Image (cartoon, rainbow, N blue to C red; front, side, top):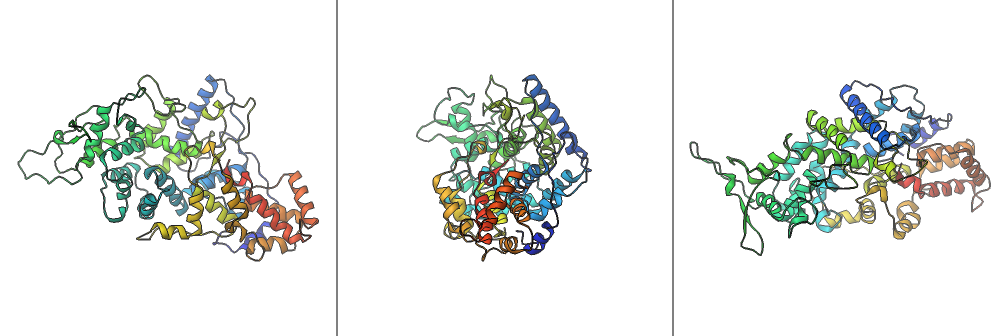
Length: 527
């Protein structure tokens, strides 16, 4: 349970009475003082509804209160809700309870922490390896401080693009370090992450399908060929021209001058660095790619699919699958001053986000791509670990004030050992788990030590408190699965406790049910 509230106090409150989980009515956006986010949510829903109508899809049912509360906590704070958070939500009759909970979670430090993990996984591709881990800690510290301070997204991106190598890959310099300080790697990563364009496909030859050429790839790489800042020109002298920025393509004698992907030739540098000139163009509100790429990253996070799928990269003769939705999101993001919180709030206020993840009739893959239902998604490794920590009563707070973190030190912590085994996957709606991962959870020390009555105060209280076995089962389900059990589940589990489980001991039977719930796919997936 949460370290903020003593387990026995939480459980005493839980034993007071049952909670219900009514369905959250669609269209109930709940005005909360942020009219802009609410209005944007309405516009997004209108676009989605019109698309569903044109494709002859009927939207699925809304999620019930238990489902939406769990989903919201995982998506916004990176962990399942605490017992008290679930009980408070289910027993709250206010029509504003959903938007109030959204505001509460977005304002929490856990929000910045969760999106630090998400954006780090995007910005530092390949951090699962030893080199990535070397820079991960300080980069996360830098990124967390920016997200907690509500730094606009364009400012964060600008600082990353303009960063250069420094000892230990500190802060935003980790982006440069992970890309090995190579112009071609930096060009590919910058275009893919911040523009949604995969120009690296054209690094060696003309791509057979995409419009991006070999020439354009190296024109972008030229911005990274000069690693040192330019010396400001004395007053009265002609500024250095960016036309002098060039790169010699490896293993050739060909020299390519810097040019933006839109075909524009950069102007005078003045006191700017080559990277600064590129970053100014990339993060400009007039850039046709930057805002769309940024909002698509967030949309994929919440819905599991890109707004340009099934074609992940728009080509010359292909429009994004949801061009109108993408434009609305991008334009609103720009108008907000690249405010990540504003955009996230609007997304989670939509009816589309609040739909249930149940199977539709007929069930088709397109129901996910047109947002008729919420897909079942895998959690990020950090989210899964922190949810285990909450449910199994070993919550471990992670600070962001470290100055140095090394791969060896990271590997020694239970958290890092877990993250090493549960690497992030690109498509979270197609999560795959291995036998080794299942065995690690079922038989490993991580959960093994915390499903024992003697090691878990919350579990011991559930097993020994003077209450009914029905209430024990309800509490276990709320603590692990964030919902009340169905009637058939209650009957089966109460009977199991009455019979003493596998050992004849009712207390151990409670622990066995607890362990079984922690190992269910329902717990390990976001739905």
